[in-house]
Amino acid sequence: MAKKGLMYALLSALLLSTMNLFVKMLGSNIPSGEIAFFRGLFGTIAVLIVMYTRGIRFSKEDRGHLVMRGLYGGFGMVCNFIALVHLKLSDATILFQTSGIFVLIFSALFLKERVPKGAGKWLLLIFVAVMVMVNPFSFTGFTWFALVAILGAALSAAAYTTIRLISKRGKHSNFEIMAYFMITGMIAGLVTTDKLVMPQGTDWLIILAIGGISVVAQFFLTGAFVTTNAVVAQFLQYVGVFISSFYGFLFFGESLSIETVGAGIAMFVSSVMLARLKAQSGPLREGKVIEDKIK
Image (cartoon, rainbow, N blue to C red; front, side):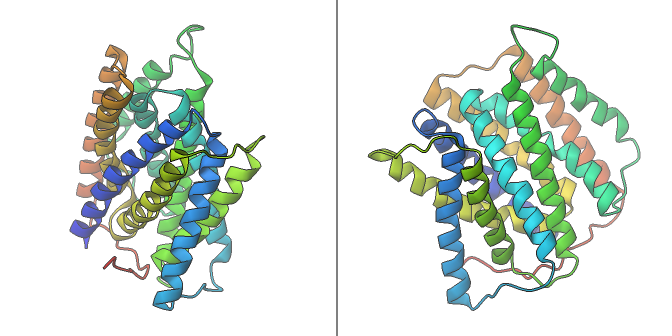
């Protein structure tokens, strides 16, 4: 089961990096909130069709947790889209990975998972790396969009932790969890958009690609957090940093600053060590969400 979770995490990293590329491409013409709305709209349609064909129904249990998971994920998605449009792909993606810190904290507080012994120094190193990237004490280097990315990471971590909480009851399909996220994500996109812009030409193709990729990626991501430890699954998402950096260079001519490279390496090494410590601290506790395999 743990190996399946690792595979899910790696596949979701590849797909989400590709989706982020399309979001940045579309962001020059369409507001970030509107992109989130369309992602939620097409995602909702796709998930409801799958649920109908497979006879999956909405459960009456845990609706509060399911809605909160959706709200955390929906507004976190909007924050991520805003950051993707205004920051370099590499910078935005690295800052998104701070969600691993929040997952560690939330897992300890709400799931009562043990914090690995010796984790403090690696968490401190991640914090220093984030400070280097955000550069809050510089009037020229600081940008509020970096804080938006971190807020998105915190909200995403809350969503992931809620998935783990729901999984302990074992009464919900992955697709049901995804449906709540897509629906609330659509709402979050609408309420954070001042003015809607009608997509033109190829914009619709990119929107469709974002919607399709997001459904499959979200399935793998949900499966990863259900079938393996929350912290381990989250830190495997660092694979997406390297993919996004390559996309940024290839499609937007983005270069990596020394600060970004240094901070990225420090965060990656720290994350690997944290994941290793977490794995050594005890056996993984598997979730019980009903798995729906993609055929």
